[in-house]
Length: 366
Ligand code: MRU
Image 1 (tube, protein in one colour):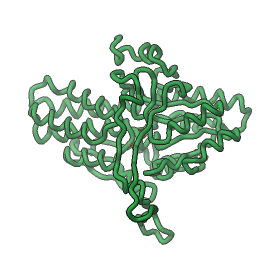
Image 2 (cartoon, helix red, strand yellow):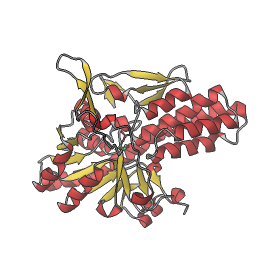
Image 3 (cartoon, protein in one colour):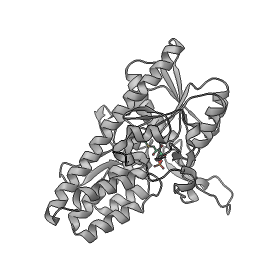
Image 4 (tube, protein in one colour):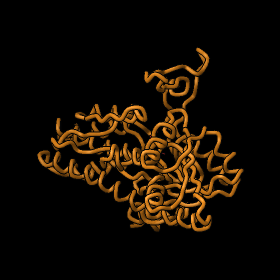
C-alpha cells in the first residue's frame, strides 16, 4: 500500500541484498519509522517485541531471520538453533512455524555453500506469495461486499473489524482489509467500525491509521461497543483476520474476537474470517483445547502509552498501584459461529471437508 504517496510493503530486502527493512509498528500511528534487521537476534527480538506483528508478517520475518542466521553460520547446528530461537518468539500464530518449515525444506538438504542463496530466494518467495494470496483473498471477499452493497441500494456497507488484519499485519494488502480496499477502490460505498483492540490497541493505532490513510471511511469504537451496534442494525458484516485456523474451521484470533462472533451470531450478522492458507493448521482440530494462547506481560494491561497534546510520548498507569493483571493475547471462535472463511481459493464453509477439499496438498489428502 502507499505511505506518503510511495508504494511500500511491510518487509523488504534492502539494496545490499542482505539486510531486511521493515516498519517499527510500535511507533505508529504517531511516527512512521523504518528499521533495518541485520542479525538473527534482531529478527527474533523484532517479532518478540511486536516491532513487527500480524501472523503473515511474523512468518515472513522469521523466514528472513533464517537467512540472516545462515549468513553467519550455515551449518546444520546453526540452522536448527536459528529455527528454535525464532519458533520460541511467539506461540500462537502458526504462520511462524509454517515459514520455518518452508525454510528448513528449502535449505536442509543443500551443501553449506548453497544455503544462503537458497534461503534468501525462499524467504523472498514467501513474502511475494503472501502479497499474491492476499490479493486473491481480496477478490474472494469483494464479491461478498458487493452483494451486500447491491442489497443496500447505495447506502454504505457497514463492516466491523477487530485488531489489525490490515496490510501492516501482512506483507501487503492485509487479509481482512484486502476485500475492503478492493471494494473501496472500485467505488463501493462502505464504512468500517474499528475496534480499538485492547490491550495493545492495534485497531486504534494501526487499523485506523492505515484505513484513514487510504481514504476508507472508518470510525474507532471502544471494544465493548460492537454488540450495541449490531443490536441496532448498524453492522452488515464482520471481517476479522486470524492467527490459526484448525482442520475443523475453529478460528484463533486476537483476544475479544470470540465475543464479537457471539454478538454477531445473536444478531444474525454474518461473521467472516479472512485467511491465507499458511494460517491453516491441519494438525490441530479442536482450537479451544489445542491452540497455545500467548500470555504477555501485565504492563500491557495496566499501562497505556500515547502522545500528549503537546506532542510528547508518555506511558501512564491506568490501574491502582499493586493490582496485577492477566494478559491473554488471543481467543478461539468455534467454527459454528463463523459464516465463511475467505481464502485465496474462494469463500469456504468453516468445516473439515471444505478446508480439506480446498487445500488437499496441505491437509494430507493431496
Ligand atoms: O498480536 P498481534 O498484533 O500479532 O495479533 C494480530 C492479529 O491477531 C491479527 O488479527 C492476525 O494476525 C491476523 S493478521 C492478517
